[in-house]
Length: 337
Ligand code: NAD
Ligand code: UDP
Image (cartoon, rainbow, N blue to C red; front, side, top):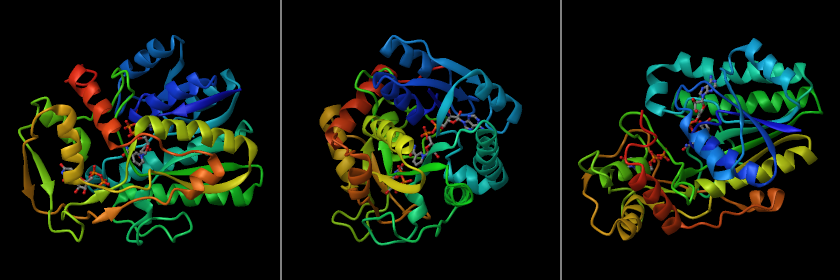
């Protein structure tokens, strides 16, 4: 039986494909290249010496999905495909609802048609909104501030309703914290389009000279050094969490939300200084005003992932900085054209 990976050419998807193959799983990948290229999958094939079955397809295209389910023995879907830029979602909310929510509804309709009722979904810590930290999975969610976050919350609710309607469904809602880093080979990594919104990709582009300096958004938060705190998680640990989540989905029914984080918070300046250790020199930065909508701190409670999945992150901030820098220094322009 194969696992269908939607959005498998993206940052988290490509790393997860590699770990699934290493764990002996059969996979089929689909992507429409909206935010990726074929190259990462070629590199995954190279790293594991395995040919990967790939479809260039859109999750909103029902006929294309049907063909994939007809041509393959799929029993589980890992659903990464989605748009993820918060700013863009504010400007183009309909695109986000159509792609992330509408696309997921189409995918689930086709899954139902072919009797495939197991899905692992890429949700986000953003659904916790203004809850106190650490975030536990039983907290009320949905207090989100932008359309991107709302699509994650809405899809969580849709998938829960699906489980209520049909007890054969198995849904794992993985709430990611802040994935950074890359595979230790430095062959695959994060390659954002345009000016990066997220901290680590920005740091990396300053380090290779593509940007002049980092702006640290606010040093007056109620945190020890005044800068924002996040739960950064190594993307390989995150990928391994998906291997465990598939095993869980295959042996349970119903819906479960599970945090994938380290449980440890790191401030912007702590991350910059950890990065400087591998970079070997100071990273140019300035203190800038707070970014609208940012929370002072965000980190996970990790007990549920440990208890249900038997999974814990094992890589620390220094590992994340080392591997991120290996990727960016060896691929300064990412995957290129
Ligand atoms: P990414 O953009 O690198 O990967 C997403 C992939 O999905 C891309 O390859 C894109 O081309 C593809 N895609 C988008 N819409 C599609 C469609 N309609 N049909 C087919 N393919 C489509 O993003 P990522 O960082 O790897 O994130 C993967 C998932 O995890 C996303 O759903 C994202 O919202 C979620 N997530 C990411 C983060 C993060 O910080 N990276 C945090 C929380 C949740
Ligand atoms: N941040 C920053 N400069 C940047 C990008 C981000 O200081 O160029 C800060 C941001 O304010 C937050 C942290 O870094 O405190 C993580 O931001 P990111 O966008 O990576 O993740 P998110 O805020 O979505 O958790």
